[in-house]
Length: 328
Image (cartoon, rainbow, N blue to C red; front, side, top):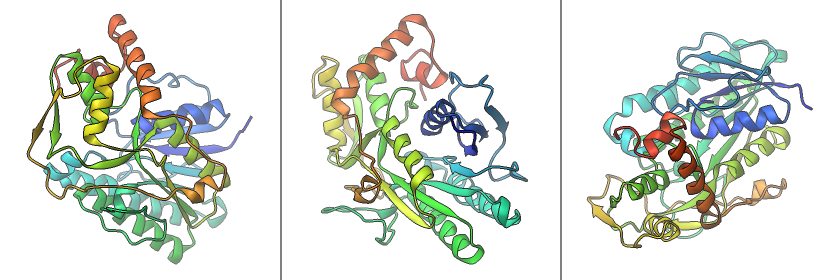
């Protein structure tokens, strides 16, 4: 068992909560800093774990870091593109100012007590790629306020790393999915509407292509980067499982026994990226590979939701997901 201490930010969010659960299972001592937004989970199983400490705080306002922390794993971020188009100042505060604050708190510590920053970025920083896959060394071309703030954060990490000798590793992941994800995302929203016998709404013609990754596969990759990655390096994490938004919706409807064409199209969102794809050969060389595919995982996903629905349990995200409370 491992007794190392790590600080996780945004650990009540979808990916961060899965990472914390995995860390505690592996014997890590975890301190979680989260400001508890609308997307925070309230069904976490680890809240009373003896190796878990919770601090309710915005990372932009954090005044100090606990001593003896070996790693900071930064999940804290606003992540929904549509929300970034409507209220981008919130994204700047969390995704840019928050990372700046973390970097300066690390810089302020004695060099012997400085933790390594594992910064969680996104494949969206590379922008559109109609062909091929982006490598970690490719230029960044963000297309939305969300991806622009994430790209800005990456650049801050690079600058503080070079100027102040801060140790860091950056993970750029594809689209995550899994049980407990908030209903604003494509997959849970599609299932939520289907359970209410409502059609899914797709931007444009639904042809926009993404790489899809089950959340536990992503967390395994982040762990590998934390435990075996090299300082100052960027690691793309992706499955190479590409589906358009329309294909994802059709797969879900097929698994649920509904008509594949149970959807409607609406006006495209501004700055829509046509395709994301990243080359993950670097992390695969460390020994990582995905264990799930979307079609294989979906029946289990839906089964878990039906169990929660029948018992009236689940987190607020899952209750939202199941239509048990009024949607946004």
